[in-house]
Length: 483
Ligand code: ADP
Ligand code: MG
Ligand code: ZN
Image (cartoon, rainbow, N blue to C red; front, side, top):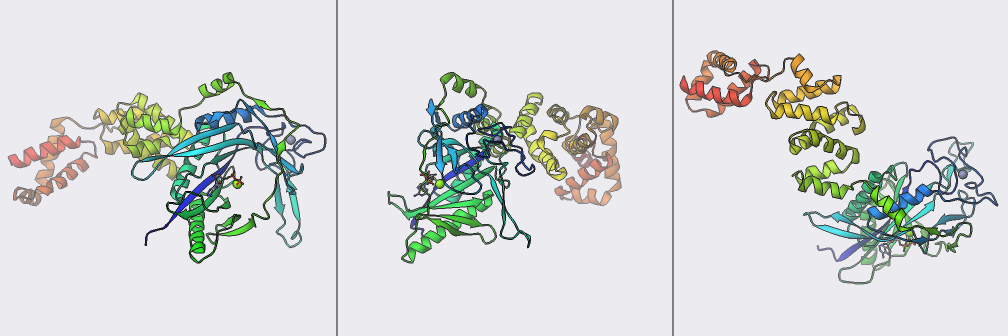
């Protein structure tokens, strides 16, 4: 059956910023401290306390805006978003509404088959987070809730996309791009599980060819890329089933339940808040001049897409390698440093994606803590390239380097791992192997060419892996044929 409905998705992403202090006061943003220990009259919402904007938050907003091709507003306004909830002592959240700090951006994503697609970014604005409610779950505490305001007033960026995505895969691809960018920029730690990077997905369907958008549901409470994909796919199915059976999608907020993979209604449009936004009289308009924007622009690191492109075009890496290596800033830096010291970029890529990543995983180590520096890895690769050791011995050396922190040259020397390229020495081994295996020799000479592998293996073994395999091969053929 062909799918007669088109999926439409727009994402609202909340990225918690990595500033040391909160957005409107000097309290620490450190996670996991004693409840309410990191509060002051401002973030407790005490009457008369006045907010003072954290300059670093603005800088992070500009960074993120520039990295996503937004226009930075020369003048933007903080607004009060009014609602009641026990984790919001002021009775309003300071956010931005009519004049956000960034607008009209975009981010390209790659589709299957190599094509790319541009996703519009409507706006990025700054806002404060609310506190946290801790609901009693012991028998005595059941029915009671405690308020922790340590998180109140921590800075967030909300990044709102246009409804430009047409499948859960496109949504995930876009989300991962934004995630990669904020982590690259160092403005957000990107932790989905802890809620430092969260996403609300707005989902609707419409018959193909219809210009008007369908009614959307907003999915909240999803804390992993996999769950977001599941939630969207489930929601699309639900909406199509509903329409097919004669029903109508209603605009509502739905909560995702990771246990069932389903979404359920949280509140409908009728219960939706009227936030009564108005400019916050406690905060002056935020003015950002060109010299500030230029200064931030010049501090931007090379972004993942640009890196990927450079790895392909300048270093000749295949698409896949470039993607993997550019995905993480520290990994990319490691690769770049290795390339500047080694002869071949592709060899660096192979070893980093193979041995280094495997070892990191196996030993639960972060790329920033690798005991083999890029220069050391480059040295090892050069010894393989100049035939001092074979690739196979290279892996043994790599392992020892990881364990001891010693350099390749030093280890090759002290462990006697140098490749044997002396014809005489290899010939001796070749002759021994030929003499010890007369049956196989007869078979080989009878036409069983494949047996050459057997002989090579034997000679390599006899040399403890140190003989140059190419030479072994050549000499074997010569001696066997000459027999
Ligand atoms: P709100 O803040 O009330 O959720 P917004 O207008 O800010 O409303 O929209 C939020 C998100 O919903 C945006 O990412 C937008 O692209 C997306 N969106 C709006 N309409 C639709 C729709 N019909 N289908 C899917 N996404 C939509
Ligand atoms: Mg919304
Ligand atoms: Zn405070």
